[in-house]
Image (cartoon, rainbow over all chains, first blue to last red; front, side):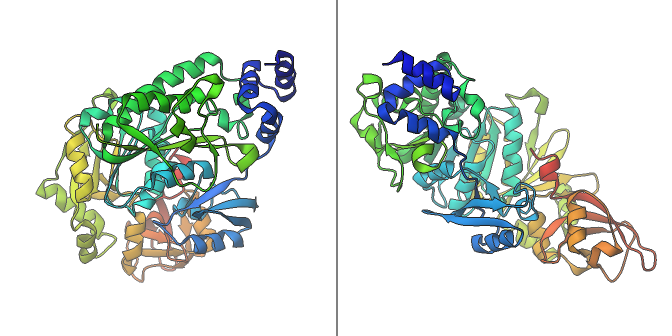
Amino acid sequence: MNNREAEQLAKQYGYRQYMIERYLELFGSETVQFLKGNELAIPSTIRMNTLAASPTEVATRLQTKGVQLEPVDGLPYAYRVRQSTVSLGATTEYLLGYYLLQSAASMWAVEALNPQADQVVVDMCAAPGGKTTLIAQFMENKGAILATDISRDRIRSLRSNLSRMRVENSLAIRMDATQLPEFGIQADAVLLDAPCTGEGLIPVDPTRKQSRITKDITILANVQKRLILAANQLLRENGVLVYATCSFAPEENEKIIDYALQRCPIQIVDAGLPLGEPGFTAPFNQELDESLHLARRFYPYKHQLEGFFICKMIKVAA
Amino acid sequence: MQNDKSRRLIFSIPTAEEEQRIYKGLAEYISEQKVNQLLTDQHMIIAKGRRQEVYILSSDLWRLYTQIQPLRHPYFIGRFLGELTKTALKPSLHILHALGDAVKDTVKVITTHTGEQKFLYGQPLENQHLKDWPAVLEEERKVLVVNDQGEALGYGLLKSAETGKVSIKNQQDLGWYLRRGH
């Protein structure tokens, strides 16, 4: 590793040096491209709420108000905002629950989960509810969603979004998601969008270049390990688990999955997503389960999305 | 809630008298037949704390609720019908669209575009902000405010109904999601 190069890049792009050192090791010759990608604005996306209105009709209404939209490939309910003369978080259509401002990366996590009507689905760290409301949309407001979050403030946002987006099949609880197994639920699908260092959000929040230290990765990885073990306990056999974070750190992604694979009867499966880079199988020279190549990583410089990690698993017979 | 002592709740199925108040609150806006449709095949529960919140649940959600509730209190569940007062149900924003789709003409007020914007900012409405209002004006009558596309915007109260003058007090509107909802 070239410390001088790391020091120089850290200074040039405003990062803590340890982050650059890690990126150099992970991305090698593509590190500068990666850093440049984090400087580019990521287009906002809105997700139409098919529980409330027709996506094309809402798109037409917004276009007459000066919002230029273009469809997002592969996500029939999503539109990229090219330009807008109005505040998209304050239109009548927004208040009517016709759409939500949501990153496309998080929509892909729900695509990977692919929840079905009449299932029991658990969203473990649900607030503010972007993914929960999309899960309800997939389920056509049928079945049941158990949505939890530990934060008192964030669960209020969850409630507000569930109400505005006309979700009728959810039960929200404020609690530590690691305690969910106490209910004895056998869920068909579990989404664990785990709390993380949030490095992937640097394009939208550059303060994250400086706000975390290496110890944060360790602390959060411990939380993530407890959460994924709980997720496994919640699943019925053949149930689907999707693990996601908005971090680039293998310690919060592939290493968490590897940890779970060694302890739980789960297998990684292809999420069937049409984009994303394969997960790492030997980050920082540490050999991990080979099936981790089926996980998907999104990078701002490659996908015009926030940094994101998605891994889909299925519970098998113990 | 076991893990939230500030929000002690008791969950119960409504008594016949409570159910009557719930029906009465909904029937202010929609016909009895529509009230029955709204509540058909639904389980109803009241979360009693500082306020009395009424929720309706599908059978699938009810099954989940019966697994969870003995151990933890939900924060929100199914469809929030509204708050039960001493006299009737005060319907919520969560079911506003359902009421709006079936609202009785006798309580429907239609805004102009300007009226829509004013109302969503929490302001009252007067004649110049309205396209249409009930033929018979009753003082203190609860009304449902919709825009000219028929989309429900919120709940109002007919304040003055002098000849030729209509005034709608804003009771609750969708702008709440921006002002208070997050």
